[in-house]
Amino acid sequence: MTRPARYEDDLMLFFDPRPGAAGLYRAIEAMVEETCPDCSVRVQKSQISFYGRHLFAMVSLPRRKRDEGLLFTLGLGRPLASPRVAYQSEPYPGRFTLHIPVTRPDELDAELRAWLQEAWTFGESK
Image 1 (cartoon, rainbow, N blue to C red):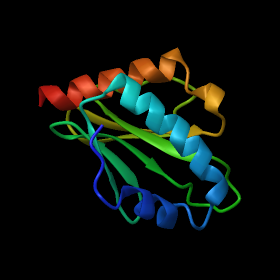
Image 2 (image 1 turned 90 degrees about the vertical axis):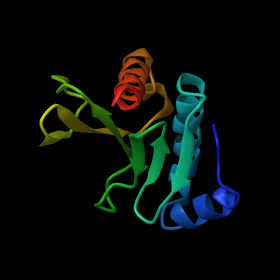
Image 3 (image 1 turned 45 degrees about the vertical axis):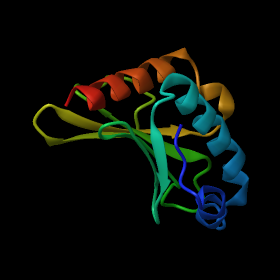
């Protein structure tokens, strides 16, 4: 995974409001790197974005401060009928954005890894 020069500093700033979520992010980061080793990552103001040829996954803090964990967002070519998906939209035909809350490392299971791989493949095929 390609990381920019200020990556660690940017991560510290990103997780400053919720430092406890940084450990969960590191588990997600490891899963993304293992599944999609040729990707790059960029820390932005409101999200951490993972790119191949195109953006395929994001991590963000929940909007409500009382919500735990992180929001893992994937871009797929199809909707998912799963109770794990908190919200999904179709911003344009054939492109679905799925928001999946992650509160514990054990939720980074084979099902989520398969969806991540699908998001990577979908992003690379565009």
